[in-house]
Length: 138
Image 1: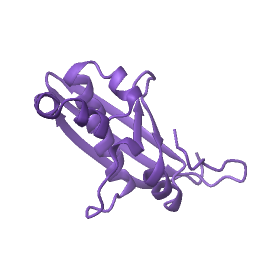
Image 2: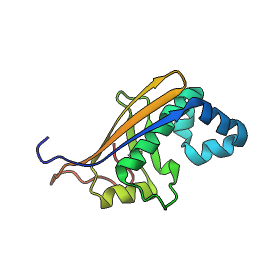
Image 3: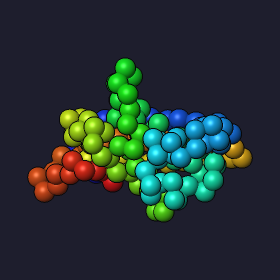
């Protein structure tokens, strides 16, 4: 699309073994801190949760989340029931996206065995008819 510009790119790799270890150690507390209720329902075990976690990390990097600022993981919500998966930003992540004028986040991921990888591309498209909501971007 003409006028579209790349705002940020992020990538991440996550291990289902690490996710399973965190769930085993911290249980529901970990799940509630990292995943929204919708994500926890759609995650297919540790491997599915690893995909979601890698996607969240990739989106955070594409947003250029300040490293010294704690990231509220549930502010980044990934919907895997679509192909390709979609992203909604909430709270502070939505505020950062709006400040950076992001109008779309594209996400791609893959999994082999216990390893998941995700790539996120944040773009801005000038438009007089579209204003992203503060609640989220898809």
